[in-house]
Amino acid sequence: MTWSADLLPSLLGIAILVLLATAVLSVYRAPHRWAPALAVLRGTLQLAVISVILTGVISSGLWVGVALGVMFVVAAATASHRLGWSLAHAGLVTGAMALGIAMTLSIVFATGAIEFSPRYALAIGGIVIGNSMSIATLAGRRFTEAVGDRWEEVEGWLALGATPRQSTLDIARSSVYSALIPSTDQTKTTGLVTLPGAFVGAIFGGVSPLEAGRFQIVVLAGIMAAGAITAVVLVAGLAPVRVKPRPVS
Image (cartoon, rainbow, N blue to C red; front, side, top):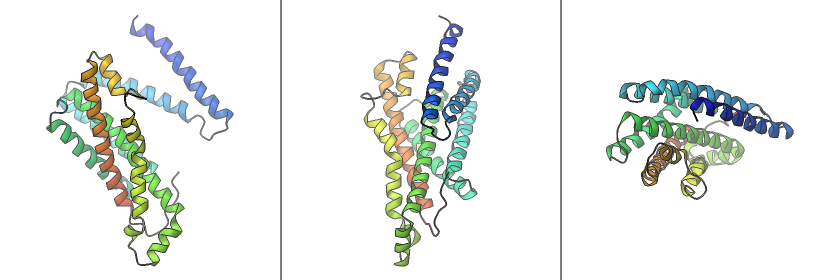
């Protein structure tokens, strides 16, 4: 069966799944019921474009670096927007993500855990960037919401002479833990509950299950390291709160 022959059944299956998700949300009258459908449409268009582009650049270190740079900028901008856009938030999110991603990829390639080549740099770099974005969003939103919910407690600490950072220390630590829960659970249940995309993709590409497993474990460890650094640096930057933060939408 050719690629073109596979396309129609794939489009049909995607359309049915999107309609199912939209119908369920509509019946329940959930807000933004069209968000999943629009997300799938946008993802489809973006993947189509990036697939064409990567076909020509995946062997070029320079263009892979450009692609990773674009991914990082979009990821940092997305996370910053989720926290309530401001130059301060954008700078903090960008710095936290950059530090976590740079340290993680440096260790991965310096130790030889994964071969340093354009193909592997693009694969693991894209995965780590995407997960760092999600963890930054979760950490920042969780901290902001928790400070708002427990503002009287924070004010009480401030009245007792605590510094702004000290008054939110417990909230900050809990926010970091909460942001890492999805990645931690994914790592703990790998092979039992889920088969991660990097593992399945490597097998589909002809790699042995043992080699695919090695690659996936390195990826998961990288996600945890980059996520931990990103979350801690971001929340530490947000922690000195002097006024009640506005709710994030």
